[in-house]
Image (cartoon, rainbow, N blue to C red; front, side, top):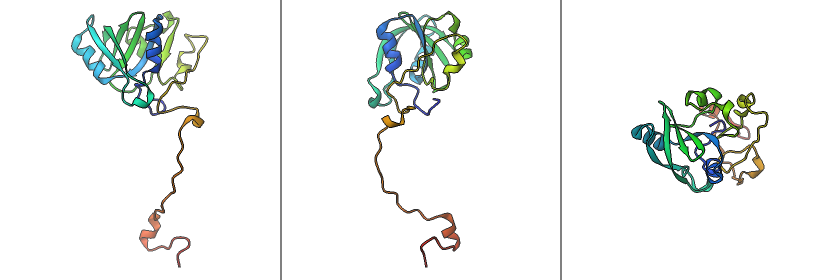
Length: 171
């Protein structure tokens, strides 16, 4: 969300689930999953599908998880040792949001923050070492990785031309 992405790219949570290491990951924009967690209620098992808004950024991640906590805009789901903080829309991760969802960052050895390009500093108080991970997605600080296609610009009249003023080059 900080850079305008969907907030649902699956690489980071997928890697944590595959590694099965004790961790928390969020905030993942998954409105359907958030709604399913609300409908199922705390303690229930739900089918998890993360990602998929664009096949360019990897396949969806599928798992079964237990609903640990449900709030108005976020829910916490446990898949093995990994807690996933999912939301009804893209949103910025903050220590307060994790705390409100019952996840205490100070008790974690690993916290993965989606869209953490600008939010990592907020967690520096809890973690002496912060590692930025560039995952596939619609935004990146590495501009050289973005595809570029040259497009010839078409001439668009300036608003002044509509008020009877001549544009440069006109007689």
